[in-house]
Length: 216
Ligand SMILES: Cc1cc2nc3c(=O)[nH]c(=O)nc-3n(C[C@H](O)[C@H](O)[C@H](O)COP(=O)(O)O)c2cc1C
Image (cartoon, rainbow, N blue to C red; front, top):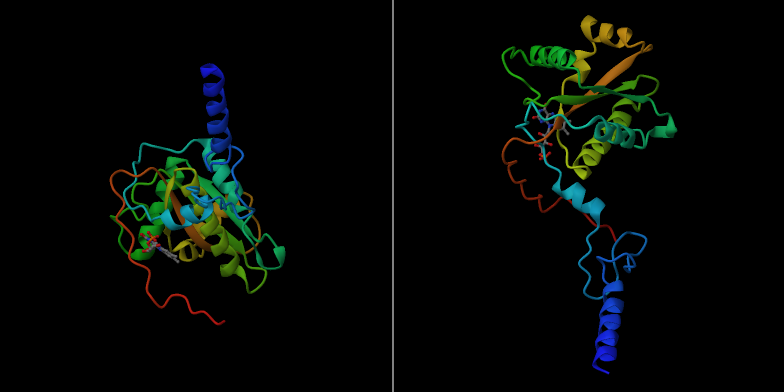
């Protein structure tokens, strides 16, 4: 009898757990939020958006795996583009020689030859966009953001590094594209420095109170 009671109580607890958000059969609705009473499940996408921070101290010796980098880059290809042109392209730079070459080009644009604008990141993705219409910058920035969020979701830190436009307007920048067999006119949109943090990433600023204006 006691055994049957125990069995019953185990079955009851299991049934309760089965409706818990951390279990397979949780009550998550299509937005990914669980509508069960004492739910602890958070929307992972929103959590990733809110916890991504610019990293400015990378461990230069810790390169994300090729599989992880491929997932990040592939996620970038799903970013929206105006009229669905898929005009942007993504260069994934893991080769140290090229990484350092781009670093020098970038520092030169800033006229600060002695600094590393990539904060020691061992890898970078460079987004460029074909100059086919007037949406170039918009299209490129959706890819940039998607890459950073995908990176965060996979535990890889990132930082948007600017001045890609100036870099790829130079003869050296154009030659890099030509050597890769990339033809046509491209505008540099930005670099995403990628890697793992070495130390703490500072906390973000509070969001300004007048960011959102409702019109109801
Ligand atoms: C268009 C753009 C250009 C940026 N350029 C640089 C840059 O060259 N170097 C840098 O350290 N951060 C750069 N950032 C990162 C911002 O400084 C950073 O996003 C901002 O300070 C907010 O911090 P958070 O990313 O941690 O939220 C850039 C961001 C954007 C959107």
